[in-house]
Length: 104
Image (cartoon, rainbow, N blue to C red; front, side, top):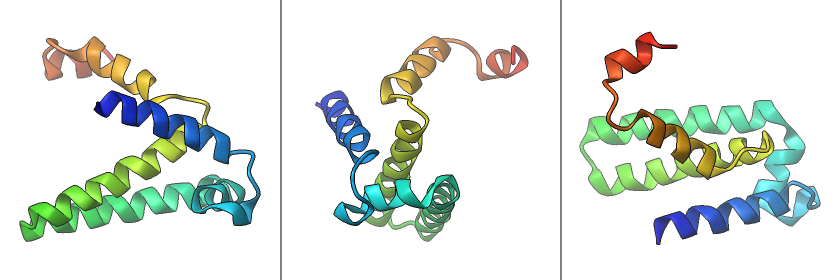
């Protein structure tokens, strides 16, 4: 189910790239440009950290969802798909994090 949600969301985000800025929140982000998208990711990352530090699991889930969403917006802007990230995670699966990092 979750991979279907990612796929459906990716399709919607792709459609928003060519939409009028006033037609949706995502379209407005695309029209504002890369810096606006990156700023939102930074804000959401900070809010995620704060929710985790506060120990509020419900808020943490909410903030991580916002962080993932805005990261998906960035991926779509760069013509990447969620599957690109999932493939990279699959490549790393079963590999020591230390070994993987050393191979970069």
